[in-house]
Amino acid sequence: GCNFFWLRKFDFYLSPDFKWPSKASKILLTSVKEAGFNENTVEDIVQDSVVMEIGCGGYFGLAPFAFSSGAKAYYGVDPSLDLDFINANELTTEFLTTALQTTFQNSAGYKQIAAGAPQLTGSKTVDEFFKICSFLKLGIDQVQLEEQVDVCFSISCLEHIHNFNRAAAVISNLSHFNTTHFHIVNFSNHISKQQPFQDLYESPYKTFANKWNNNINGLRVSDMLNCFRKENLDLHSITLDQNIDILPASIDDYWLSRYNKEELAIRVAILTNL
Image (cartoon, rainbow, N blue to C red; front, side, top):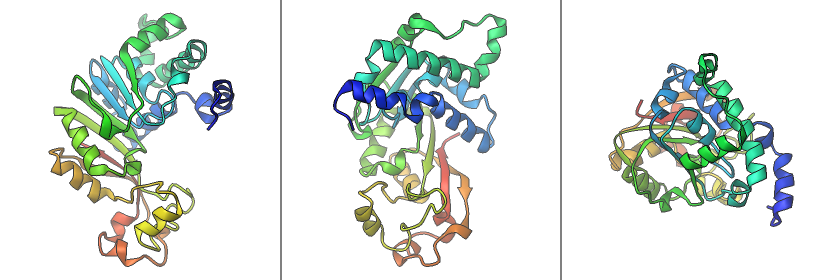
């Protein structure tokens, strides 16, 4: 929340993002494996493709992964993007070089080093990165591109989009018939990892939203899938984390009249057409 760039820079040096520059790619690749896909699946899809990430965060998101995997273009979309940071040459080179190295090492492409693939280091590589990667400080409902995307990712983002019908329509317009979608969605309260549904299900959604500053949109798996299908995006869900035993003892009728307990117990799921 600092207005002065040097203070934001200092905050960033102390942040988890700086200490774990390949976080987004690690989450993506781990989720791919947990969903039962081959570990090379998304890298193969990204190669030579136009990639869009919804909710890339304040910095680079999956851009290092897309670049390392040979994407033709990458668009990172997030209203919280820190464009001052992204455009700061010295800081960007330092962080991005590390991010590219660690991302490459976590990817299947790392095996190519022995075969003579170039190391991802230095300002020249950073220059190449920005020829491929673009960043839009916008909500997804405001995005317009001159081309449709081949791959669309999001990591713990869709649950924060309140104008979801509009967002689904924009995502559909930016997709073509063969666009691959892979969205990791966290349906928890975003308050407690130990009690992921505390305060959420004991009362109607609006009560929770008013108390916690509208931190999530309250949609469940079926809601999101229905919104996408109305926009001709036929996605399905793959549950990664579900536990009925951690549901609150008392669940408000607002939830029980709309969803069964099995759906309410889903904490993390992937929405995809893979």
